[in-house]
Image 1 (cartoon, one colour):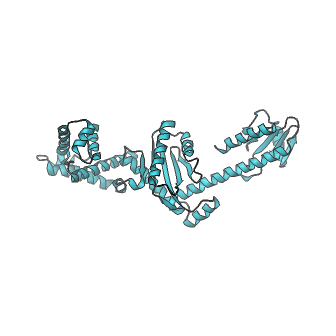
Image 2 (cartoon, rainbow, N blue to C red):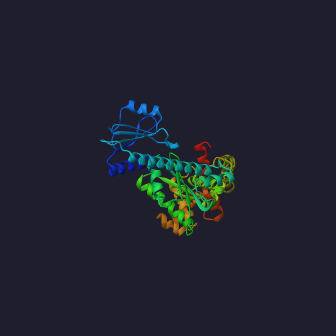
Image 3 (cartoon, rainbow, N blue to C red):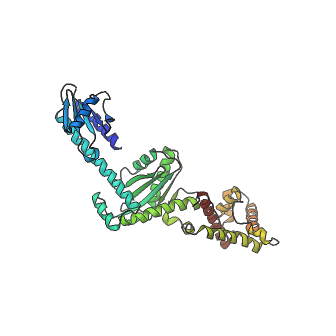
Length: 378
């Protein structure tokens, strides 16, 4: 519930208790929240009140109050008593409104401070000073999660906030239209399996409630506020790397990225050279009768159809086990062997052996990385 919604709820409650109508005007004298749209005094009366610079003034059944908190110094509270000035009721309402604006401002300050910590805008000393301002414990086990969706839907942020609504020490904020960041403070009995469960819950909720595809990445455990910046970098790396190399997954832990994290740091030119050497020279080395020029043309895996790629992925997922792979794919074992031999003839790599399988797996990941870099132009 945002500040405007909270104020509206309070005004309705005050009306139920006192019988008065309430309205808050913003700095442009537009209605911010109200219990009755037609209770406003004449515009001339409002302008005259602003010029007088007094805390309160009564106009028959209307009372206009200045809101003196710094966060809403140009706002006005109007109370309509219908038969008589509202007196103490209006003064109490002003105090409550000022408190709510101040609380909202502190919440915004908290969001800004934590976001600046995540983005590395403070030194270590400044982090501790800022944390003291917002009563944030410097040392605690925290995890940084990033949630990316395919659609820019404002309800995504609210859904994620509702997931963490009972965790008062957690921080949830939108980074942009399609990305939300969560700083989750882990309890004593929580471990990385619990983080995986939370991530899966977020994916399921977004799929169900918003019907959008989503990905969640998370960092290693950060034991100190000064580590949150590196935690944010880890989560961002996991999100990008995971989507490049592990397209079949939706949740990416930084510590579970495996070889993908290493490949992501290799320059594009080196990756292209690797593909040329492996898919070119290997064929030239094993396929008799081919000219060097023909071998040089084989540099990517893009020519493989989706069915063949599915066979290869399933074969790798089943630890190079022919019988288990044929069972999963519902094909005869001899048919599978035939398809794998065709791959060997084309690329000179027998992926039934561990060494060639490892080489081909790396080539697949490097190919995905090259395609991503070219697509994004990065």
